[in-house]
Image 1 (cartoon, one colour):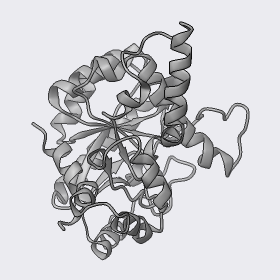
Image 2 (image 1 turned 90 degrees about the vertical axis):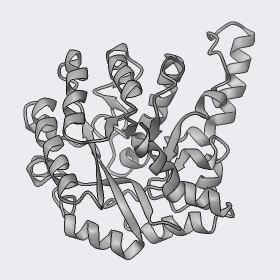
Image 3 (image 1 turned 90 degrees about the horizontal axis):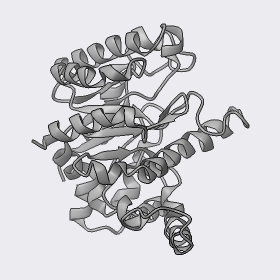
Length: 305
């Protein structure tokens, strides 16, 4: 097997981390990251933005994006053999999104790192459509990470454990649902959408989506989506986000094939990466399917022309 491509890891430049409440420790340590990769046989790691509160302390998204994208580009150029960079967007001025994407391209960043929502605005809104058109034309995958600043439900329950465990992943799930209801996946079929954490609770509610949709269609209470929800989900991609659960993997495989699942460590948040690797190695999947999850799927996405 070729070396693993880690499709969900994090690095925050010190210039950004210093302006966050939580990400000051270990999130800017490149040497530690490389040591972990070497020890685990990870050939390359994609660096995604975990969403932070930095924009609240630096006067908005524009400054965060300017610094973050440049620093990620510099790191990637210094170690092109080990790191792949993903750029982030500013939603302060949605009309500039296409220009931002061109700048991200010019920095050599191959993927766009998105939050599942921005201050309650999900990715189904039309302000994001020019970004999807650009991403589809230039074959830039879009990776969606849970929003941790005011995720869904935090207005009713804000708890140091319940918010990150439940509300973060619920925000991803709602994002997928709203994008489906807005026909985003059908309008932009050429865009590769990758959702973190197996799409939140999506694998567990796939059947409920289909059954409830069929019931409501029969009473004309929901518009025609052109296909059952599960059919639309089959075209999406999901990363494992450091999951150590064999059952979670099997559940995700009921939504998509192994060709649409990518290994992700969630470094440095996840400290049990060997167990996350072992889940796939002992999954009972064929060697070809395991290789797809570990590196081939990521390689295809990154090499798309």
